[in-house]
Figure 1 (spheres, one colour):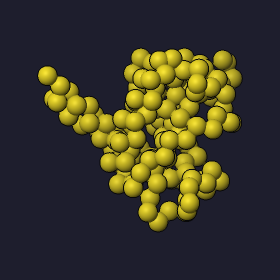
Figure 2 (cartoon, one colour):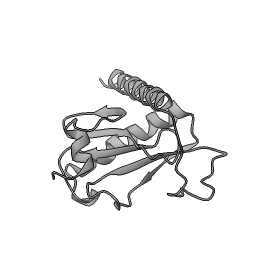
Figure 3 (tube, one colour):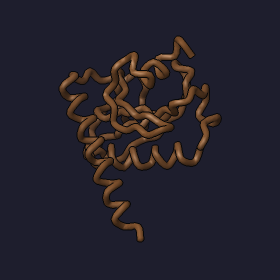
Figure 4 (cartoon, helix red, strand yellow):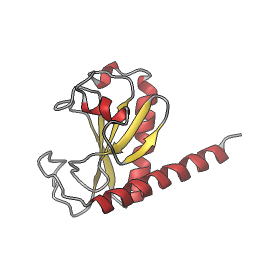
Length: 144
């Protein structure tokens, strides 16, 4: 998909604040964040819609792990998982941290975009990645 911005990010043609990557999926900070730590999880293979993504269960398991890592790294009260699929025709899950006194009262409001400096984006991406790494380390120690 030559004109797909997410495919260009996956190919490395457009830089991103990467927080997670494996053979099938990539997660990076949204450049128009609704809150600090707002992350997008995309499949590396181009699918138009989330319901088309395979392996579907693995996609949502990664979303859950990322959600926990984002919550820990940002000290947010929860992380909303949002799929509304408009704007970019490449499957993506928004992982949006919710803070106690933010301007998303009663839910997440898509027009409440935050201006976050490049330095802050770099710092939070690193914290999320570290939180995710420690989570994976803990999980691997728990297994027999």
